[in-house]
Image 1 (cartoon, rainbow, N blue to C red):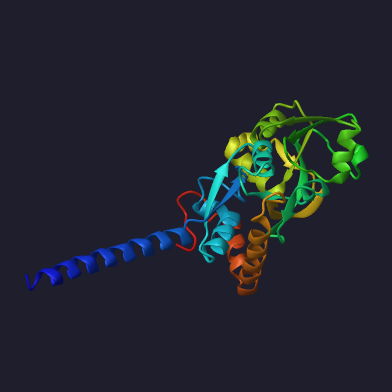
Image 2 (image 1 turned 90 degrees about the vertical axis):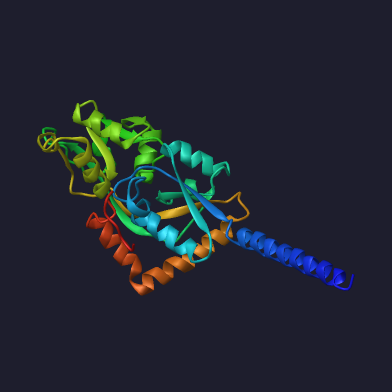
Length: 271
């Protein structure tokens, strides 16, 4: 009888300790449960599901948010679908995108991550020359759903100055271009040549080139839906983190690794 109260006290302490540990585990789990969902699409060499860290831009995003204790989930969709899903609040952000006046009506644009040069691709046996958008009059022009090609292009497309065949993927546009069903296709220069090397044989690659005069040189961004109450916080967090990466030189390292093909499947960066 003398030891009975001590045994009960001991059991009670064990139960209390277990309860405290369990509560701490739940609290710790909650602190690390936040996930930012980013919709994107295959756009080599900037982003790819098969690349380490999803490519350089994915690596930038992961690095910034993981430093804040936030996991990042990337979802790959056709561009128009991913854009709409973010606009509807199903996914919280999209990347990599140009910022246009129309997009800024629905999204917050981050600070620039990298600049891309948009050019017209065409077959080498088609003598394409252009200086202004008027030089495209009467042509069959390729386009990808959900893409923004600059205000001059968008205005001319709305006014039907030339025929734009918008389809779901860049890859299909290049295959249509190779068959001569369209005369020109606007695309980021780095992305275009990476895609051409992947889609066509070395002999076929000789039939496609680009016009040296760029349509525009614009920066690529991470976009957050304006109708999401978390977006401003995520935006501020990203911009601050991006500045840290720029100041430290780490951002340049990621982009240099992209140009060198380090992120390609089987490669590694920062492992």
